[in-house]
Length: 628
Image 1 (cartoon, helix red, strand yellow):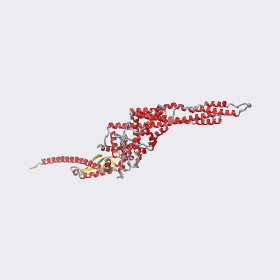
Image 2 (cartoon, one colour):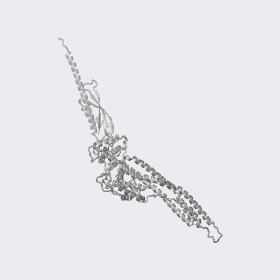
Image 3 (cartoon, one colour):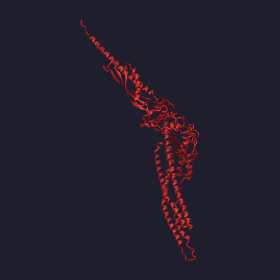
Image 4 (tube, one colour):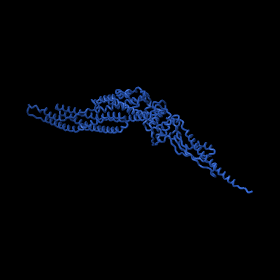
């Protein structure tokens, strides 16, 4: 019987198709699984790499920093963590071939924005108290800008006051010269009355010599007047440019108190015309004097040559002869100035100027508590991030982010009030000033706090009518002028600005005594009287007042200084401090070697299990990214 194999063949072909489909499905599932396994292995390995963060940086500053000098070191570490996954890949059958760094962001990159992000991530856990809201931050920033603007304006007008005083002294020199000319003129007039020709001419020579000083004195006066007018014009232009930084009340008060400078310049225009006419007047007087000299010689010659044959002749009429000289001399009318001039009480003026002089000469000795030793720490290192990192990128920083950054610095950095024996103590001051030594940082920071306090104090004085009246009374004593004259107004504003500065010195002294000082002053929280201000200028010493319970402490004012500052620069200075302190235990630690974020591309070799023929191997790529 003949057998047929059609069914067998059909069944075999059907099984082949079924097995092929099943193997394809299995291989597809295995391939998909291998991709998931590879991604999981890559991400887990990257997590493991980033878990090797610097423990000391975390313990001291709560920052995650992964030390890694180059790409190869990062790739090697990642491959090491990938090996156990490759060995345990099972039917996924994988072998690691290579790893390449796609992106690497270090903590020093991006203008400091990565350090900022780590700080904000930590600060969200709330190690601070009584933080303001967005509206409060805006008001605070506005107040700080206003204080700095008022300080700049008052400093400029203080300079103008000194220029005005120098101008008054130049006028006083002219007036003194005219008075001395009057003395010589009267003395010469008396010699004429004594019929003393040689004595008359001697006094006339002295008078002419004094007159010869007038052109130089007038020129000096003119130069000082031009300088004052030019500088006041520049300041007024600058004042108009700061309108946006000043509130309407402060702007109006400043304009009201400084308008006397314009009045003074206008008044000086009239006075200057009189003064500039003096050289021409003296030349006319010299001509009259020369005529008087010649006539005196003629009179003496007449007397010497008098010859009379009449025995009863009493000689020449001396009264008549010398009277002709006197008549000529009377025409030499020495001019005088009708304007009051000069500072009548230069001692008080000097004491006020001395207060400002302390800022340049010995501010630290004035504000530091007795017995305070200034740290001699040095922050000079060529490897500091602020020196080696030149990334010019900028980034936006919200106001609340700035406040949180200041709170972070206050929590982790030391200051002049901190206890300890660290080599570099004034870390917060370095954040503000960026100088190379502790002493320089402390001095610059004190000046910055002083500037804010001076501005806020002057704002208070401008709003307090009683203090303005007291300043005007003292200005009247200094100038000796009755009533409200332009010069008195100028000196009054100078008194107010120095008063604000003196109060600021007391404020800073209190802060460094670990006392609190309110940000907005009132009559109740004001410490320094005008008499005490003059005493400060005389002795160069001051003492802090009673603490303001609702005030702000020293580190609080340092945070105020950081708040409006340039974020990138502050972040790099913070990196400097972190590196400096971590280097004490690990000398080769560098912030520039610390990784914040990385992306790695890896290539592995896998093997087909159900297909592939003579070359069952194929490559697989994976990318993984991690950031702290």
